[in-house]
Image (cartoon, rainbow, N blue to C red; front, side, top):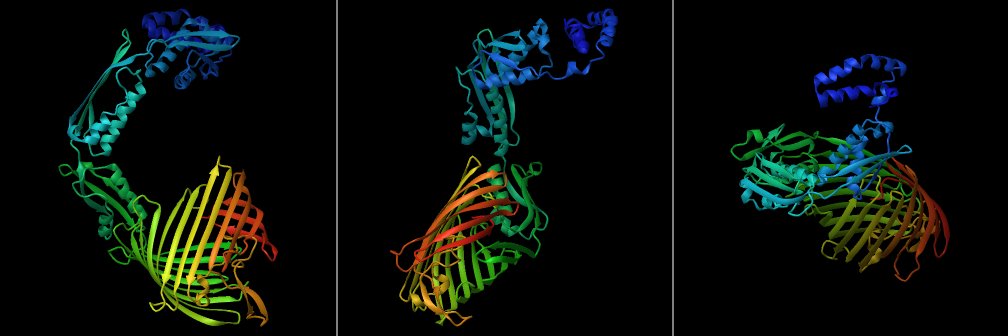
Length: 616
């Protein structure tokens, strides 16, 4: 019996008497012990609350080697409201034994024995699991249309418990739940378990399992219904990955919802089955939607050492007509570059990744650190396509380019090119702004022939790649590289915007933007004095390796090595740079600072680089 100084702890004792021995006996005990209880409460200062507080006993569990069993026993014992001093009482020792039995029974151990020893305040629980129950017989049966469905049968027959296995009730219960969810996900909306029974034959240490499923019929996709303006009906029908009469599948419906949300036409959209309005076995799919505004505008601001502050203003009209055509335009402004572009997009079969695009643009460039300036007009037709669930995007294009450019005392040139081209790109990253892991690859080729819309023969190929990996959320490594080559019959007429240059924030740090390339003596347009200036090259090769260490939640320390060149002679020496850096992981993306020491064959330089925004 509980000791007197445990105060209110005697109350559970009388409650247990009530449960175990009946109302009359318990009430008699309460009446005869009432005076004793009254004075006991006074003597203990009405110390009621500590008795009901959950104990902080640490149980030392012995005899159990399996972690899952050990953890389950510990979790169950933690729920006992008991103090260490009470565990010498036979009643509480029986409670511990019953608690342990409850914890191990789901794993097939229905004949366990438990003893409790309290020594020097330590509670040692010795568990003897004894022989577990094994599965003697498993009887399964499907009633209904699911019996003829191969996928349904395979899922139903994948029940893991077989004859001779140790009984595990978690597997049994998990199968019942997962089978029910699978049935609903595949159109068996009337599914229910007609019989589920687990018969335990403890004397023979065996268990028999009976599972009889009533699948009911398999429902099918019905027609689409709309809640909201239905001007997008034609587009939505094209996005639908199923036909009326196809077997219902929640996976297909999830793909449908994903395509709707990625289409760019809607502020909010969701498709769901309305089983209560089924026409026979045809379940209508209700599409609730809210269209984007007729016109939308956006602004993006950034900065980098190469360009200084920059701003991009965007406008988009997502709906031009009922076929889903859209139009957008961007204005880009920075110190060296100003441009205006317009893009008219025509969706094809899969409107999220399969479309044609007509792009027109004007660009003016004048770099303060060179005597170069150019003015470019372009018109391009692109055909983009991407396989479902693939990160690879293809782009077939034909581009008309007319560029007027001059550099110092070089005569002003105007070159026109018609360039069929193809590119393939891969992009995958774990965040839009602060990237811990990501990969990027692009291969681009363009070709033009003199007399076929072009003033010169021209062919260009470029390969770019970058990989970012983070280990243990601390060590971050980024590797990037770029290779390019131009083949032409008259290189001096190649527009300077198509030539190769190296140097700058995203190339070889430690040097000005476009500083690394073949040079020539030109006249500075501001001073009239002759200067040596970069004029671009036929070949490009750059590479970079950077390591960053996260020393605080939003800060990384970095170190890098860059190497590369832009040249007309592939045997020329490479330029390289090294330096430290620091990254601030801000809410609007990473802000990166670097101090770079550049090493060129003719000179050594220092450069500060500041970059805002993600690398990919």
